[in-house]
Length: 512
Ligand code: NAD
Picture 1 (cartoon, protein in one colour):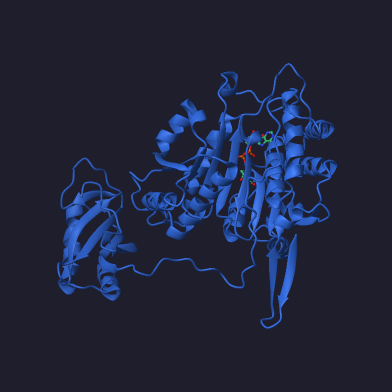
Picture 2 (cartoon, rainbow, N blue to C red):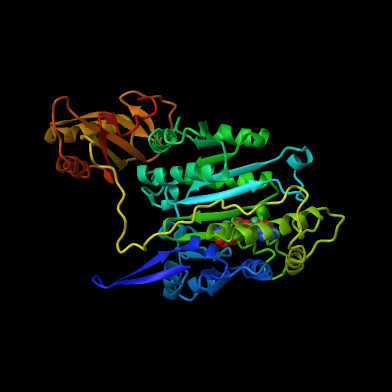
């Protein structure tokens, strides 16, 4: 339910999201629904048919989003009305969507998650009776929840070709963004009664980005002594997920690593057809399946609606409809136990059902209890509710932070040997006497003042200048040094070197 308030003195309309109140049986909640592309409309129709049969008290406002809206000239893949509806209702239930290739437009799925700040992506993976895997056959039960950071990391999509040969992408990990998702992960563990949360990372290599995520995890963990916290290098995690999946309960990760690991977990429990996804934010949340539009089977009516149904069941819990959620989930589990299946899974000896027949089978089993243990009406999610913002929220840590400017990394295009480049760089120090040349690297490996003749070079170098002992430098002087250098070499980009609270805010080169 949402309640719209018009503030008399500010001429501002605010929306209060009151999802929790929807547990009252006489209240109906309106949500935004986007059918999606490819198999999207087929599986959405099946899921809503099951909801209606279970007498779920939801109203749906269908919104215009997806490929056809890109094709019609909407650069964000949705109409202005769709955006307004989603922002007002605060909840979007969506089918998979296709982003047109080669038109330079961003993925509508990633954009929606980022623009509306759905910072936590929760994906629950568990063994389902009737969905056979190597683990289920070996009697190894799997029940893993992945919490993936959903806004930051390489998904900022900030990439540049610095030279014709060299592309770079920015990986953004922030303290407030990490804290938001990590705190959500700990809270989720408490709600679900989980005892263990692991933080997976690659902080041994990405010391500042993954290092920051891990540092925040360790800080937040101190507030949750009831949850056993640990950290694990992501490659080790992948090996252990495949060899001992039953030892994990919940894992929190940065965006790209979380994306990869959650598909791995989908594979453990039977594939993408069984992978639900909830994108949780403080004002707007999005529920969808993990899989895409499956263009190879679109229009054939044979898609498996289970992943979208599991996402819908999570959404019902989020909205406070936990009794409905339990009834539908029990019917689904019972149906799977009976060996009922669509073409993408199940015993080959039993004929497969199409999407509509599969939904009808679940409907006919509403009220049944699965042998593997009936699900009871609990809420796995904490419904977020708040006053819709009137301006963008700023989140930053500033107080008590002592910053010191140390120098600069100037990235240049040059097709010469390191010694020649060092001679040019030193030439420009004549006018910039507060700086000294400390290092030149290529692809992150130091090649000057020392290096190896076996290091192969590309035409983009990093030249590191640091301030001399005892001197103070300003940004203006740093920009001067870059401007002077540009007389001899093409400048590709400039990064400042900073210390924060006396700690180095930049990494050393390999071999430095
Ligand atoms: P996909 O998930 O659509 O398909 C991968 C394989 O899994 C295909 O063989 C497909 O037939 C099968 N499959 C997927 N869902 C199924 C289902 N419910 N039932 C039965 N089989 C199913 O991945 P893709 O082919 O890489 O991507 C296709 C399109 O989907 C792309 O345009 C991609 O950008 C988009 N996509 C959208 C989302 C989203 O909306 N959240 C997510 C992933 C991909």
